[in-house]
Amino acid sequence: MKQENHNNKRVFVSGCYDMLHSGHVAFFKEASKYGDLYVGIGSDKTIEELKNRKTVCSEKERLYMVKSIRYVTDACINNGSGMMDFIESVDRFKPDVFVVNSDGGSDTKRKFCEERGIEYVVLEREPEAGLQARSTTSLRKEVKSHLPYRVDIAGTWIDQPYVSEHGSGWAITASIEPTYDFMERGGMSTSTRNAAKKIWPYELPAYNEEMLARLLFCFENDPENEGHVSGAQDAIGICVSGLSRHFYDGHYWPNRIESVHDEEILKWLESHLCVAPMFPRRKGCSVVEGKDISPEKVKDLTDAADRCWDAIMKRDLEGFAKAFLDSFHAQVAMFPAMMQPGVAEEIEKWRPKALAWKMLGAGGGGNLLLVVDEVPEGAIPIKIRRRE
Image 1 (cartoon, rainbow, N blue to C red):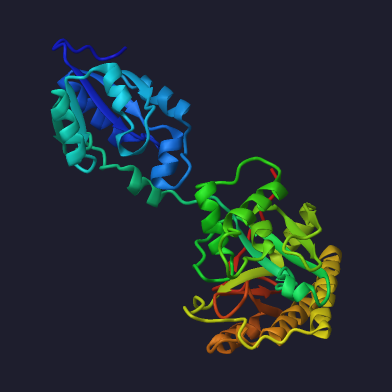
Image 2 (image 1 turned 90 degrees about the vertical axis):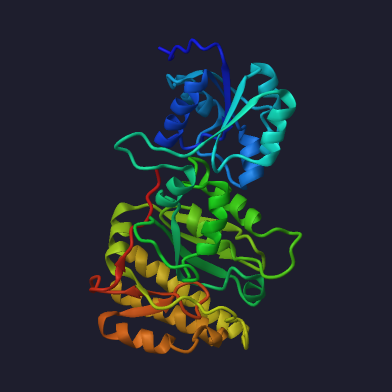
């Protein structure tokens, strides 16, 4: 039952109320002391324009939840746009009092109320007794994204047309669960993952995975911007579950994608791959400087990727380790700047514990991916994302 208020005043508040929490409820409770409470809710479109992100809960969900709170008399979705999207809602509810939080007030809102003869009230954030203070901003910082990371296993660089024009071949990737907060600039496709967060803040939608990868690739690589195009393997590695390989032949997007979801193969791969952190790729580092690409070197890369895939399918650890290391050597032969100062020393630390190793991503630093008999102390196990 709605809280009854007998002072005959109407009170108005407005906000996004995405990720509804106890701080919102406490605010509604305090505002309702001034009269019957009416709430204007920012539309999905307005929030996306103001905050450059999708909402967690749709406007219909938010309207339903806000209306269900006992301190609220009625609520609506604001029809306007921008920070003053609530003007039509104010005209609809005709409030006597406009209430804002101390961090949500503005001179523009105060002037708006003065012009309409509406009392303007500013409340400090006060949590309910026994509860901690809550805000959507702080809550977002605490909630971790469930978006996957990508590990590239073999064939890295073949997704760049200036490489695959010398010889077509496969890149092999795996989508892995975010069981660990991997470093930025570490070869785990964090830049592409951060781009994905702008579309899907917390998790990938249940949709065709290849289509999601295409959308992410196009979103990250704006055709109006000149410069480096992020390889398609990053978007595919994040969005396509399981173990995948994608075939490149002179174009940015592969002409086919194959995925493996066999549980025995995925478990075997998880038991023999792990991540070893080094240091983030240094700012200003150019791994393409001094590149030396030839048909012979590209063939070394693609042959190694073929052997790597075959060994995984057979669960042949010795063959997998050899092909994995050959793929890394082929990458470095074409892009020697991958081996930035300090990388060789980091590899030496893990050499006694690993059967093979490679830098993830374009190299220059970041994380190593190790092939091992069993995951050694200090390394991070991986969990391959299963298809839902």
